Amino acid sequence: MKKFALIVMMVFAAGFVFAQDDELEGSTLEQPVRKPVEMPWEQVNTGENTDPVAYPPVRQADVMYYWTIWRIIDLREKINHPLYFPTEQRGTWRSLGQTIFDAIDMSNPEKTEGVLPLYSDEMCTLPYSRDELQSIISQTQPITKYDLETGEEIGTEELVIQFEPKEIINYRLKEVWYFDKQYSTFRVQILEIEPIIEYERPTSNSSYDEEDDQEDVAPQKTQKRLGYIYFNELRPFLAKQEVFNVKNNAARLSFDDLITWKRDFSSLIYKESNVYDRDIEEYIANSRDQRIESERITEKLRTFEHDLWEF
Picture 1 (cartoon, one colour):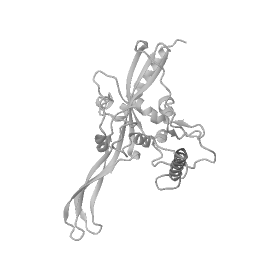
Picture 2: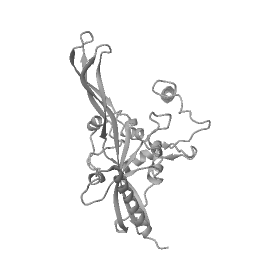
Picture 3: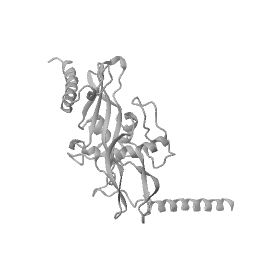
Protein backbone atom coordinates (compact mmCIF):
# COMPACT_ATOMS: atom_id res chain seq x y z
CA MET A 1 0.00 0.00 0.00
CA LYS A 2 2.83 2.37 0.84
CA LYS A 3 4.51 1.59 -2.49
CA PHE A 4 1.27 2.30 -4.34
CA ALA A 5 0.84 5.65 -2.56
CA LEU A 6 4.46 6.57 -3.36
CA ILE A 7 3.94 5.79 -7.06
CA VAL A 8 0.76 7.89 -7.17
CA MET A 9 2.60 10.85 -5.60
CA MET A 10 5.46 10.57 -8.11
CA VAL A 11 3.04 10.49 -11.06
CA PHE A 12 1.20 13.52 -9.69
CA ALA A 13 4.46 15.44 -9.23
CA ALA A 14 5.62 14.61 -12.76
CA GLY A 15 2.28 15.77 -14.16
CA PHE A 16 2.58 19.03 -12.24
CA VAL A 17 6.08 19.66 -13.64
CA PHE A 18 4.99 19.01 -17.24
CA ALA A 19 1.96 21.25 -16.74
CA GLN A 20 4.29 24.05 -15.67
CA ASP A 21 6.43 23.47 -18.78
CA ASP A 22 3.32 23.69 -20.96
CA GLU A 23 2.45 26.99 -19.33
CA LEU A 24 5.91 28.37 -20.05
CA GLU A 25 5.68 27.27 -23.68
CA GLY A 26 2.31 28.93 -24.12
CA SER A 27 1.52 32.49 -25.10
CA THR A 28 2.40 34.85 -22.25
CA LEU A 29 3.77 38.37 -22.15
CA GLU A 30 7.24 37.11 -21.18
CA GLN A 31 7.42 33.94 -23.31
CA PRO A 32 6.97 34.01 -27.12
CA VAL A 33 4.66 31.49 -28.79
CA ARG A 34 7.33 30.14 -31.13
CA LYS A 35 10.68 30.95 -32.64
CA PRO A 36 10.78 34.01 -34.91
CA VAL A 37 9.10 33.25 -38.25
CA GLU A 38 11.65 34.39 -40.84
CA MET A 39 11.78 31.66 -43.52
CA PRO A 40 9.24 29.27 -45.11
CA TRP A 41 11.45 26.34 -44.05
CA GLU A 42 12.71 25.19 -40.68
CA GLN A 43 15.59 27.50 -39.83
CA VAL A 44 18.61 25.93 -38.16
CA ASN A 45 20.22 28.89 -36.49
CA THR A 46 23.66 29.12 -34.95
CA GLY A 47 23.33 27.12 -31.75
CA GLU A 48 24.58 27.71 -28.25
CA ASN A 49 27.24 25.04 -28.77
CA THR A 50 28.91 26.97 -31.61
CA ASP A 51 32.48 27.81 -30.69
CA PRO A 52 34.88 30.15 -32.50
CA VAL A 53 37.50 28.59 -34.72
CA ALA A 54 40.76 28.43 -32.81
CA TYR A 55 43.77 30.41 -33.97
CA PRO A 56 46.69 28.43 -35.37
CA PRO A 57 49.22 27.72 -32.60
CA VAL A 58 52.17 30.08 -32.52
CA ARG A 59 55.38 30.09 -30.50
CA GLN A 60 57.38 33.14 -29.64
CA ALA A 61 60.48 31.45 -31.09
CA ASP A 62 58.74 31.17 -34.48
CA VAL A 63 57.79 34.87 -34.70
CA MET A 64 60.59 36.51 -36.67
CA TYR A 65 58.72 39.82 -37.15
CA TYR A 66 55.65 41.53 -35.72
CA TRP A 67 54.11 45.00 -35.86
CA THR A 68 51.27 46.45 -33.80
CA ILE A 69 48.56 48.44 -35.58
CA TRP A 70 45.63 50.49 -34.25
CA ARG A 71 42.76 51.08 -36.65
CA ILE A 72 39.26 52.58 -36.51
CA ILE A 73 36.11 51.19 -38.16
CA ASP A 74 33.62 53.88 -39.15
CA LEU A 75 30.11 52.37 -39.25
CA ARG A 76 28.88 55.22 -41.46
CA GLU A 77 30.76 53.70 -44.40
CA LYS A 78 28.55 51.56 -46.60
CA ILE A 79 30.76 48.48 -46.49
CA ASN A 80 30.51 48.49 -42.68
CA HIS A 81 26.69 48.62 -42.57
CA PRO A 82 26.36 44.87 -41.77
CA LEU A 83 28.06 45.68 -38.46
CA TYR A 84 25.66 48.55 -37.66
CA PHE A 85 22.26 47.31 -38.81
CA PRO A 86 19.64 46.47 -37.70
CA THR A 87 19.31 49.36 -35.26
CA GLU A 88 16.59 47.37 -33.46
CA GLN A 89 16.68 43.59 -33.07
CA ARG A 90 14.53 41.74 -35.61
CA GLY A 91 14.00 38.10 -34.72
CA THR A 92 17.44 36.49 -34.54
CA TRP A 93 19.08 39.31 -36.47
CA ARG A 94 21.16 41.65 -34.30
CA SER A 95 23.84 44.25 -34.87
CA LEU A 96 27.37 44.00 -33.53
CA GLY A 97 26.56 46.67 -30.93
CA GLN A 98 23.47 44.77 -29.78
CA THR A 99 25.52 41.56 -29.54
CA ILE A 100 28.08 43.32 -27.32
CA PHE A 101 25.40 44.91 -25.11
CA ASP A 102 23.67 41.54 -24.71
CA ALA A 103 27.00 39.92 -23.83
CA ILE A 104 27.60 42.56 -21.14
CA ASP A 105 24.03 41.89 -19.92
CA MET A 106 23.28 44.83 -17.66
CA SER A 107 19.65 43.74 -17.38
CA ASN A 108 20.81 41.90 -14.25
CA PRO A 109 23.50 44.06 -12.56
CA GLU A 110 24.21 41.32 -10.00
CA LYS A 111 25.05 38.72 -12.64
CA THR A 112 28.78 37.97 -12.82
CA GLU A 113 28.96 34.55 -14.52
CA GLY A 114 28.90 34.21 -18.29
CA VAL A 115 28.99 37.96 -18.99
CA LEU A 116 31.47 39.94 -21.07
CA PRO A 117 33.87 42.08 -18.98
CA LEU A 118 35.02 45.57 -19.96
CA TYR A 119 38.45 46.85 -19.03
CA SER A 120 39.66 50.32 -18.16
CA ASP A 121 43.13 49.88 -19.66
CA GLU A 122 44.31 48.94 -23.13
CA MET A 123 46.18 45.88 -21.85
CA CYS A 124 42.87 44.47 -20.54
CA THR A 125 44.12 43.88 -16.99
CA LEU A 126 41.76 46.09 -14.91
CA PRO A 127 38.10 45.09 -15.37
CA TYR A 128 35.25 47.41 -14.42
CA SER A 129 32.93 46.33 -11.64
CA ARG A 130 29.23 45.86 -12.40
CA ASP A 131 28.42 49.13 -10.64
CA GLU A 132 31.02 50.97 -12.72
CA LEU A 133 29.62 49.40 -15.90
CA GLN A 134 26.17 50.70 -15.04
CA SER A 135 27.48 54.27 -14.95
CA ILE A 136 29.57 53.79 -18.11
CA ILE A 137 26.76 52.63 -20.37
CA SER A 138 24.38 55.34 -19.16
CA GLN A 139 24.41 59.07 -18.59
CA THR A 140 22.84 61.18 -15.85
CA GLN A 141 21.12 64.29 -17.12
CA PRO A 142 19.87 67.02 -14.77
CA ILE A 143 16.36 68.09 -15.66
CA THR A 144 15.17 71.50 -14.51
CA LYS A 145 11.61 71.48 -13.17
CA TYR A 146 9.33 74.50 -13.64
CA ASP A 147 6.02 75.52 -12.22
CA LEU A 148 3.41 75.04 -14.95
CA GLU A 149 1.47 78.13 -13.89
CA THR A 150 4.19 80.67 -13.13
CA GLY A 151 7.08 79.24 -15.15
CA GLU A 152 9.40 79.63 -12.18
CA GLU A 153 12.18 77.15 -11.53
CA ILE A 154 11.28 74.89 -8.63
CA GLY A 155 14.25 72.50 -8.61
CA THR A 156 16.12 69.84 -10.58
CA GLU A 157 15.74 66.12 -11.08
CA GLU A 158 18.32 63.52 -12.16
CA LEU A 159 17.31 61.49 -15.20
CA VAL A 160 19.30 58.31 -16.02
CA ILE A 161 19.40 57.60 -19.77
CA GLN A 162 20.70 54.23 -20.98
CA PHE A 163 22.88 54.26 -24.09
CA GLU A 164 21.61 52.26 -27.05
CA PRO A 165 23.62 50.01 -29.41
CA LYS A 166 22.65 52.16 -32.39
CA GLU A 167 24.63 55.03 -30.84
CA ILE A 168 27.89 53.13 -31.42
CA ILE A 169 29.37 54.70 -34.56
CA ASN A 170 33.02 53.61 -34.33
CA TYR A 171 35.07 50.64 -33.22
CA ARG A 172 38.76 50.89 -32.46
CA LEU A 173 40.85 47.78 -32.96
CA LYS A 174 44.30 46.88 -31.74
CA GLU A 175 45.88 44.11 -33.77
CA VAL A 176 49.25 42.43 -34.25
CA TRP A 177 50.66 41.48 -37.64
CA TYR A 178 53.34 38.81 -37.39
CA PHE A 179 55.32 36.44 -39.60
CA ASP A 180 55.39 32.84 -38.43
CA LYS A 181 58.45 31.10 -39.87
CA GLN A 182 57.11 27.68 -38.82
CA TYR A 183 54.23 27.98 -41.31
CA SER A 184 55.84 30.67 -43.53
CA THR A 185 52.72 32.83 -43.26
CA PHE A 186 52.08 36.48 -42.47
CA ARG A 187 49.12 36.62 -40.10
CA VAL A 188 47.07 39.10 -38.13
CA GLN A 189 45.32 38.70 -34.80
CA ILE A 190 42.99 41.22 -33.12
CA LEU A 191 43.88 41.84 -29.47
CA GLU A 192 41.17 44.21 -28.27
CA ILE A 193 38.20 46.19 -29.51
CA GLU A 194 36.82 49.45 -28.13
CA PRO A 195 33.29 50.72 -28.95
CA ILE A 196 32.88 54.48 -29.33
CA ILE A 197 29.44 56.00 -28.67
CA GLU A 198 28.22 59.27 -30.14
CA TYR A 199 25.22 60.76 -28.40
CA GLU A 200 23.46 64.09 -28.07
CA ARG A 201 23.97 65.81 -24.75
CA PRO A 202 21.35 68.53 -24.31
CA THR A 203 22.65 71.89 -23.11
CA SER A 204 20.10 74.10 -21.39
CA ASN A 205 20.18 77.85 -21.81
CA SER A 206 18.36 80.60 -20.02
CA SER A 207 15.40 81.01 -22.40
CA TYR A 208 12.05 79.47 -21.54
CA ASP A 209 9.03 78.89 -23.76
CA GLU A 210 5.90 79.55 -21.71
CA GLU A 211 3.55 78.26 -24.44
CA ASP A 212 5.17 74.82 -24.70
CA ASP A 213 6.26 74.69 -21.04
CA GLN A 214 9.70 73.60 -22.23
CA GLU A 215 13.14 75.06 -21.96
CA ASP A 216 15.12 75.87 -25.08
CA VAL A 217 17.53 72.97 -25.48
CA ALA A 218 20.43 72.93 -27.93
CA PRO A 219 21.64 69.31 -28.44
CA GLN A 220 25.38 68.86 -28.58
CA LYS A 221 27.06 65.73 -29.99
CA THR A 222 29.59 64.09 -27.71
CA GLN A 223 31.69 60.95 -28.07
CA LYS A 224 32.33 58.52 -25.23
CA ARG A 225 34.64 55.51 -25.03
CA LEU A 226 32.88 52.58 -23.40
CA GLY A 227 36.00 50.63 -22.47
CA TYR A 228 38.31 47.95 -23.82
CA ILE A 229 37.12 44.45 -24.66
CA TYR A 230 39.54 41.54 -24.87
CA PHE A 231 38.73 40.15 -28.29
CA ASN A 232 39.28 36.49 -27.36
CA GLU A 233 36.63 36.88 -24.65
CA LEU A 234 34.23 38.44 -27.16
CA ARG A 235 34.70 35.80 -29.88
CA PRO A 236 32.43 33.13 -28.28
CA PHE A 237 29.54 35.62 -28.40
CA LEU A 238 30.35 36.65 -31.97
CA ALA A 239 30.45 33.04 -33.15
CA LYS A 240 26.87 32.50 -31.98
CA GLN A 241 25.44 35.53 -33.80
CA GLU A 242 24.76 35.46 -37.54
CA VAL A 243 25.40 38.53 -39.66
CA PHE A 244 23.65 39.72 -42.80
CA ASN A 245 25.47 38.53 -45.92
CA VAL A 246 25.12 41.19 -48.62
CA LYS A 247 26.05 38.69 -51.36
CA ASN A 248 23.93 35.68 -50.44
CA ASN A 249 21.52 35.29 -47.53
CA ALA A 250 21.79 31.50 -47.71
CA ALA A 251 25.57 31.64 -47.17
CA ARG A 252 25.30 32.63 -43.56
CA LEU A 253 28.25 34.01 -41.63
CA SER A 254 28.80 34.82 -37.99
CA PHE A 255 30.35 38.04 -36.76
CA ASP A 256 33.44 36.01 -35.89
CA ASP A 257 33.73 34.81 -39.50
CA LEU A 258 33.25 38.33 -40.84
CA ILE A 259 35.69 40.14 -38.55
CA THR A 260 38.29 37.55 -37.57
CA TRP A 261 38.76 35.50 -40.72
CA LYS A 262 37.24 37.26 -43.74
CA ARG A 263 38.04 40.76 -42.41
CA ASP A 264 35.25 42.10 -44.58
CA PHE A 265 35.24 45.67 -43.26
CA SER A 266 36.75 49.04 -44.10
CA SER A 267 39.03 50.78 -41.62
CA LEU A 268 41.64 53.48 -41.26
CA ILE A 269 44.93 53.11 -39.40
CA TYR A 270 45.35 55.86 -36.82
CA LYS A 271 48.44 54.55 -35.01
CA GLU A 272 51.35 52.16 -35.41
CA SER A 273 54.10 51.02 -33.09
CA ASN A 274 56.45 53.95 -32.52
CA VAL A 275 58.99 55.04 -29.96
CA TYR A 276 56.91 58.12 -29.00
CA ASP A 277 53.68 56.12 -28.53
CA ARG A 278 51.69 58.75 -30.41
CA ASP A 279 48.80 58.71 -32.88
CA ILE A 280 49.15 59.85 -36.47
CA GLU A 281 47.12 62.99 -35.76
CA GLU A 282 49.69 64.05 -33.17
CA TYR A 283 52.40 64.57 -35.77
CA ILE A 284 50.27 65.16 -38.90
CA ALA A 285 47.58 67.84 -38.65
CA ASN A 286 46.03 67.67 -42.11
CA SER A 287 43.32 65.00 -42.49
CA ARG A 288 44.32 64.28 -46.08
CA ASP A 289 47.93 63.68 -45.08
CA GLN A 290 46.75 61.50 -42.22
CA ARG A 291 45.00 59.21 -44.69
CA ILE A 292 48.14 59.13 -46.85
CA GLU A 293 50.16 58.13 -43.79
CA SER A 294 47.63 55.39 -43.03
CA GLU A 295 47.98 54.02 -46.55
CA ARG A 296 51.78 54.20 -46.24
CA ILE A 297 51.67 51.96 -43.17
CA THR A 298 49.40 49.50 -44.97
CA GLU A 299 51.72 49.44 -47.95
CA LYS A 300 54.71 48.86 -45.65
CA LEU A 301 53.13 45.66 -44.35
CA ARG A 302 52.29 44.52 -47.87
CA THR A 303 55.82 45.20 -49.04
CA PHE A 304 57.30 43.25 -46.16
CA GLU A 305 55.22 40.20 -47.01
CA HIS A 306 55.95 40.55 -50.74
CA ASP A 307 59.71 40.79 -50.19
CA LEU A 308 59.76 37.52 -48.27
CA TRP A 309 59.26 35.58 -51.48
CA GLU A 310 61.34 35.16 -54.61
CA PHE A 311 59.83 34.68 -58.06
